[in-house]
Image (cartoon, rainbow, N blue to C red; front, side, top):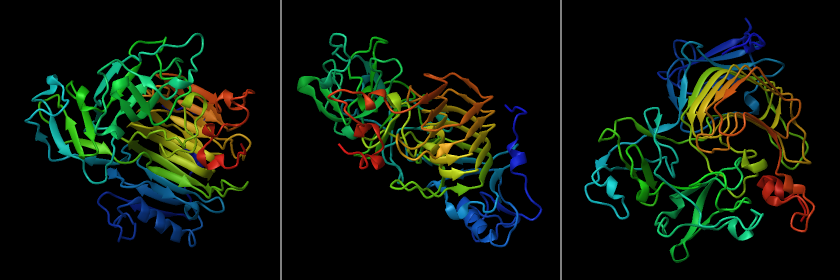
Length: 481
């Protein structure tokens, strides 16, 4: 989908005095980067572009030839990699056959589970297959058969605790989940088990890890609490779901992982696993990062870096840690490496005709210091949380996120894992514009303009200032209790 409002191609038009480099899946990093001897990796092309900047007056085009590029670590563009004096560094694929970037690792060596496993569902007996977790993968949250996402094992139920009177803020329920007898147990791999919960408010959703399960009390304690309470939801039944246990691996297509034994269990729909079972290794693929000074008023931004005609797919879902600062209702996390394409300290950059799909986290992030960054003609769909997040610094800090533009984009079917995902979130930014975008099939809002949670500044004995947990960890030391 394109509109005749803006063409990034005109902004990034090449110069006859510029230079061209090539990257190919069949290339070699010992080559010279020419069309006949292309590089194999983006890193080699980036390093060659650094050298060319001193001898080239025009723009530098890095042509990424068609193919499937498997990233083993995020590709980082730093201060030395930006364009100087208005010159542009342009990473571009072919519009009709763009390169595809993934981070998946193939799961091999599947064997049929012949003997019933402890706590295994009777429905799954004789149906399960097992494989070792490959090197390079830890706790996986996503599994694919080719490009098809496979559902993790799940079982839904209700908390046995309702609301107390008119208040949802029962402090003892912020980090206590009471469950029906026999639903949960003291799992041997407790760190792998997750709880998905829709609390009292219809606009909230949490995915939590468990710290302890007390079977004698029918009590589960997650690793972090939630203000809305781990109680029954008046909006829906079976608002709690336990994820990733062998106990509830009871439907074809489901899987679970045990990181203690480093084993993956899977019930194939077709009777046996295909040769295309894979899991993603990265939550972030490309990062443009300047010098971020959290303790001063001055950042140094990367400038004039542009991306065109790329496909990014199958990234991993991340997890909200205690140290993460959250926007209102945890719709987004501040300064988090969970976007496949991320700007963190950037000015005068752009993204044009990039497709991001079938991924576990966010699509594009403009974090902290971002100015005049344009996201145009992009398609973002079927992702775990939010399509595009524009998030500056916290309250009372640097005002350096502004005048960004999101235009002519199509964003849909977001929030596939985190059901409070949005198409676009703007927070701690100003004069940033969303124009001519097609947004649909979102579980929550299409566009959210938000900040930190309202009670951060509420005047009461309990909330008498800026609460540490409402700010990113990197900013908390600047607040005096």
